[in-house]
Length: 255
Image 1 (cartoon, rainbow, N blue to C red):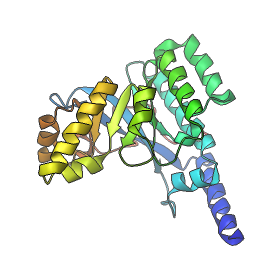
Image 2 (cartoon, one colour):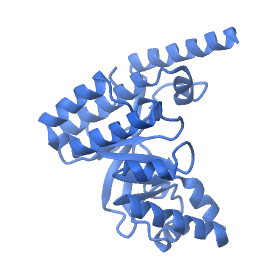
Image 3 (cartoon, rainbow, N blue to C red):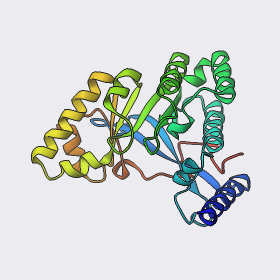
Image 4 (cartoon, rainbow, N blue to C red):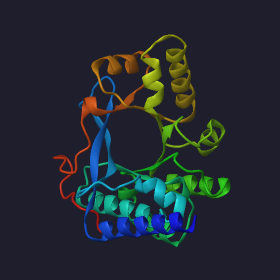
């Protein structure tokens, strides 16, 4: 057990060394309108290695070790810098549910947004489902604080992890992103398709913006339109790119 813990800790150190050395970046992928795919709601930044692939899932590792907060702070700070340089862009990024608790770092960012509300209004903070919130009350306070500042706080990958619909209904996120697993099952039609329709309807009752993830083919696009999802994301509309032409100034993450 101790040997495994030591190895995991070493891998976490290697990951942060790679971040410090500029070997990590954000690859951006558009979220587009289902009927008018040229219309982009925002671009989501996805963490990517700019060098050799990491030997394990670094997000899961850092969450397990309780060391994810520093990465999330770096990612959000870099996205805010890109927003500052590109006033026409709206960008999103992921943070762990473990990081969704107000602390001095988040409060400092909140202070910036109080002074610069035009930045807050162009930031989407996507909270992933890969870990449980540390505290229900703290998570709600996080949603409320950044929503009040003008950010869009999103629930990412709904249905793939730890969020319950009761929590989502209470948090009232600005955006709900439905996990691609619902789409994969709905390709077979029948009850799975009806289940996707029900999930979409429920999400639309909770949030003004609903996104279906994992659109890979024209058939997926047609299915998504049939269940009345307004916003879509997937390889059909663009692969994640570090060198995305619509994101000037993007490069390696700054620690």
